[in-house]
Image 1: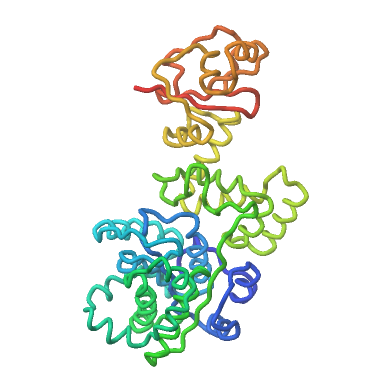
Image 2: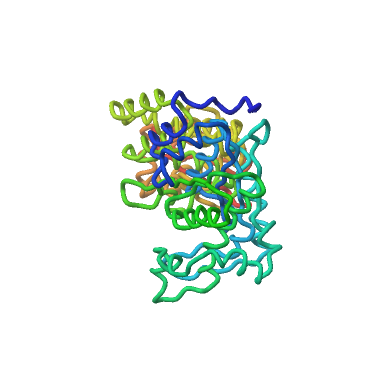
Amino acid sequence: MTDSSLPPPGRDSLTDDLRWRGLIQDSTGLDELRALLDDGSVAYYVGFDPTAPSLHVGHLMQVATARRLQLAGHRPLLLVGGATGQIGDPKESAERTLNPPEVVAGWVARIRDQLAPFVSYQGANAAQLVNNLDWTGEMSVVEFLRDVGKHFPVNKMLAREVVRARLESGISFTEFSYQLLQANDFFELHRRHGCQLQFGGSDQWGNITAGVDYVRRRGVGPVQAFTTPLVTKSDGTKFGKTEGGAIWLDPEMTSPYAFYQFWVNVDDRDVGRYLRYFSFRSREELEALEKETAERPAARAAQRALAEELTTLVHGEREMAQVVAASQALFGRGSLEELAPATLRAALAEAGLVRLAELPDVAGLLREAGLVPSLKEARRVIAEGGAYVNNNRVSAVDAVLTPEDLLHGRYLVLRRGKRSFAGVELRA
C-alpha cells in the first residue's frame, strides 16, 4: 500500500491477531480462514445498509475490522446497500418502515463518504466502494425467483432465529426475502471482483452462511466467512447510546467533542475490550494501557488514548486538536478565544447550555446555569473567589457583564471551583 498514514500490521499472523483481539466469534473454519488470510492477498467484503443518514459507533466494529484486514494486505470491497437498504433486514420486534428510494440513495452517498477515512484507495489492494443496487436493480422478478430463489430451501429460511420469532406476529415476504438478496451479493462480488471472504456482526451469521452456501450451490466456491461479536457494555446499557441518543459518525449529528467525550467516559471494565476491538496500537501498547488502567484508574489513560485515536480517525487531526484544546480550555488550562465557535458550542452543550435573551448579573448567571441553587449561594461563591467567567475570576458580588465579554459575540463559560462549569448562549 502506498498510503503512509496507515501503520504496518502487527507481528502475529492476521488470524492470530484477530483472535487475540476477540474479533472472531463464528467462522466457516479457523484453519480454512487462516489458510486464506495468510496465503496472499484476497478480496473481502463487508456491507452497510443505509437505514439512517449516518453510520454510528455500532458500525465501528465493522469499519475498523475492514481497515485491519487491509493493513494486512487484503483488498476491501465496502458494500453500501442501495438495494437491501430499501428492504431492511428483519427485526425480531416488528416490520421495518420502508424508506423512499430517493431517501435511501441520498443516505448511500453520505455513508460512502463516511467510510473513506478508514481505508486506502491507493495501491495494489486499493479499497473499492460497491452498491448492490447495481446488480439487483437490473434483475427482473422472474430472474430473481429462477436464478436465486431456486437455491434456497424454505425450511432452512424458516429456521433462522429472527424469522421464527416473527412467525406468530407476522413477517412480510419483503423482509423474508432479505436473506436471498444478501446471499446474492456474495455471489455477485465473487463473480465480479473475485471476493473470497465476507464478515459482519454476529447477528448476521444466518445471512452470511446462506451466502457461503449459495456461492457453493452456484458452483463457484469455496468462499469463507466470519463474524465479529456484538459490542456490549458491562453495565447492561446499549453500546453507542447516551442520554442524547445514538453516537453518530456524522459531525452534524454528533459533534466531534461529544464523540470524544463518549470514549473518554467509557467504563474501566470495558475500555480494555474496546481498545482491542477498535485501536490500531500494538499488543504491547494495549497491554501497557490495560495495566495502567488497573493500577491508576483515575488517570483514564486508556480512555484518553482510545478517544484520541478514534476521534482523529473519524474526524481528522484538526478537529481532534480543537477537541483537546476545548477540553483543556473549559477547565482553565487553555485559551477559550482560540476555540472555533462550533467546537465551543458543542463543548458547552455537553456540559449544559442555557440560552438567555439578556444578561443578568454574574450571580444571576450562576443560578440560571444551575451551578448554584440560589442568588444567596451565588454571592457567597463569588465572595469566596470560586466563580469564574471565561476563566477569569469574578471578585465583585454585584459584577455585571457587557456584550464585549461574550465569546464569538454570543457565548459565556461559567465555572464554579475547578470542575463544575456550564455555558450561556445569548439569543439574537
